[in-house]
Picture 1: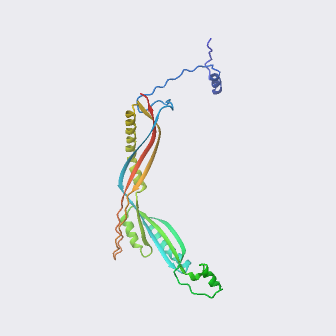
Picture 2: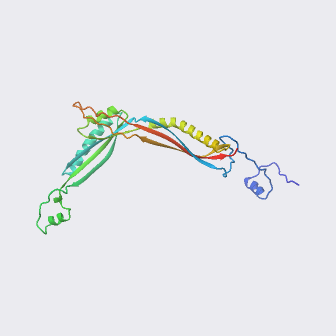
Picture 3: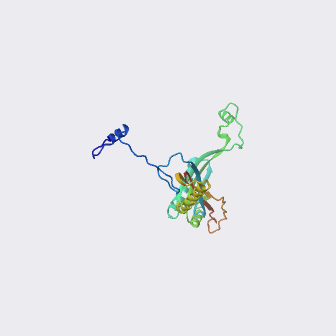
Length: 270
C-alpha cells in the first residue's frame, strides 16, 4: 500500500531522510537541446566545446600631450645644486597649477656624483695617504662633479597651451620630451562603441561554426573581454622658438583601440 503523508510542512532534514530511505520517488526530468542560440540549464558537461575569439578596432587621434621639463645643474656644492633645482621646480609647478587646463606632477629627481676618470692625477709622495687613495681609485684626486636633476610632467588636452607654457618657462626648466596619449574619457567612449561591434562579431563567428560543424545551436560557456591600445610610432618635430618665445610646433599621432572577446561555447546537437 502506498504511504501517505499529511499536508504539513516538512523540515529540510526530514525531507532528506525520506529521500535517502526511498520513501519518496521523484520523477526524472528529461532535457532536450533546442536548435537555438541558448539551451536549458540542464545541459551536460559531455557536450563538445569550441574556443572562439573576435575583435573590433578603431583608429583615432590622440588627444592628450605630456611634456617633460627638466632642470639639470652641475657643480662642486651638492647642497647649492639641490636648492637651485628645487627653486626652479617650485616656480614652474606653481605657474602650472594656476592654469586649470594644465596638470602637473613630479617626475624623476636625482643627485649624484659624476667622476671624471680622464682627469690627470697629480703625483703624490710614496707612502702618503693621498698616494694610497689614488692607487685604489677612490681619492679626491680622481676628480669629478656633482649633478642635480629634477623633472616635471605637464599634461594637457590643450596642446597649443601646453606648448606655449613650455616656452614661457624655458629659462627655469628646459623641454626634454613630448609624449602623446589617448585620454581615459576618449578611450571609454570608443570602447562602448566597440563593445557592440565585438559582441556581434563573436555571435556571427559562433553561428558560422555551428553551421559548418552541423550542430543544432550553441550555449556560451565563458567569455572574457580585453582591450589593447596600439599607438602609432611618431617622433614629434620640434622647431626653434622665435624671439617672442612661441612654443614648439607639435602634432599628435594616432592610436588604434582594439576591444577583443574570447570565450568558449557548448555545441548543441540538432
